[in-house]
Image 1 (cartoon, one colour):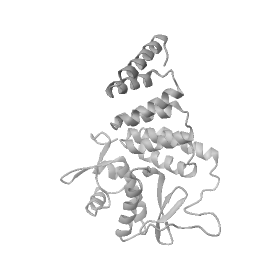
Image 2: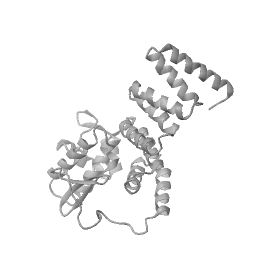
Image 3: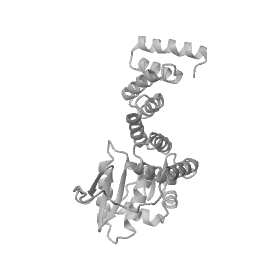
Length: 273
């Protein structure tokens, strides 16, 4: 975890996780390749999403001498991830000397933004692993789940790779949301939960967690809508009725607040969850 900074990481902690030197990270900051979340003199703090960008930069720079194309690529990724796309949905790859950004089924050249169209067959980007079937997916998923507590960055890498193969995997989106929330990337967590909601619209757990995240982000209007959706899916949720009562009270809707409080007391008395 972070060195005394909650959801942020010191330069040394980031260097250890990404497996580069602290000097390399300071150079990236100086060259504006990476922008720290907080700065006090030469002491930087980085968010979890900054570490993802560092890993992308490290991978791209391994075979390149010039920083400028990589800077452009990272800036392109930043632009794509605000405000609607999770950083973990994008991948940077190289092909014939070009840096490409893969966003789902779309692939475009990072420096120009030009779309890359495939002719004469399906796309073939990156190394294809033979025998990567359901058993291997489950093996990787379980590995990521086991190490998420002690090595969240490695777990994120595994989950991201799996989502690239199975973008409609509900459980993967839920795991990603939990990991990103724990590491302080609330925006990324929200976007993966929204992805899960598209896949399973009637899941009360998805809408409950969305409501809680929106409350953390002080987006009470969105929180209210998510909790209302959650209570439609599961009318017996004590936690959701409690949050609805609090939000309606905050918005000045006394009658609605009292209605949910009454249901909350009844459910609590009956021993509902």
